[in-house]
Length: 278
Length: 124
Image (cartoon, rainbow over all chains, first blue to last red; front, side, top):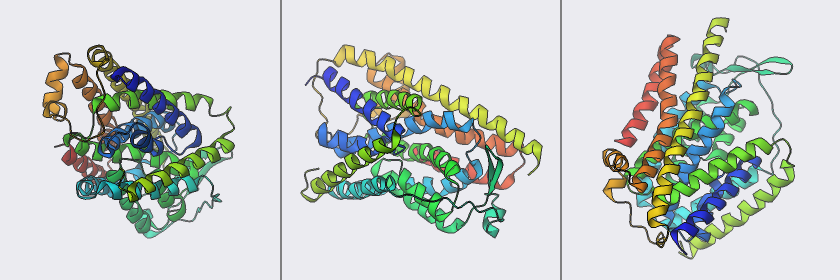
């Protein structure tokens, strides 16, 4: 296979990943690493660096569309970024000392977790009481516009959410993914932030977290231009097309289908990790 | 929450939206320019990513990437585009500092400066 054919195939694969990622809300990063390592036989270190680039691209691309609606809670995002960026630095540092087979196994487990979020239904419970003392002191409580008017909400379990975000940052730094699933757990389940706010705020944070680890990976030579070029351009195109057809597609069926694919890839990654194929 | 603060928040957010959009667009254009040079010169070669070797210094250090990109080298141009992409969310954090200073929110000015410092440490 020549470089040209390789580039075109990788571009198409990344575009498909970006499309499915944006249609299902699971993010494109989760399938990129298995695509690179299992299909294109790329070393997992290069795959991590490449995936980080795609994570920043999709996050910034999507955030540009979201912030205009004024739902992102910038204070909440910035406060939690203290936890995620420190975690990302630690994770990128740790990654050098962890055997690649273990990285593959941990990655598989995180993939299963992201696939499961597609199946679990979470009923929202917006709390409008003033929230904890800490959330008031940190001015984390906010509001967003709905059809019925301004909806106020308060943030709970600030410390618990902060710790969970730190773990999400570490995982993101080790694996080169956005850790969207872990961020959703921290914000939706632990801190009980409304879905509309947590999705956009977590997306805002994903880009900043990934930028922190990308710097380290670039310096270490994990980011290869021949890989990140088709992946970045492909993912951007896929995500853009996805955002345009989002309202026409039957996303529920697609989401389940994609989750099954992700689950299959997860098992494949774990299997390869155990047999030291990766 | 008073009204004037809400309006200034809204302005900051809309500038941020444009910042991100243009950041990603500029990054993609630089990468695409680098891609055409790279594929023109190396398109017929064979990809070798099975074994990790790490990138050479000219593709990992910011100053070297800039120098080689200005000489019109394809791979360095792609790396420059990637650097612009990495800079986009960082610019957003930087912009938030300005926003919090204008709002005279001392606590969040410090929190945001701390986040910025952590990211800059990662790039040094």
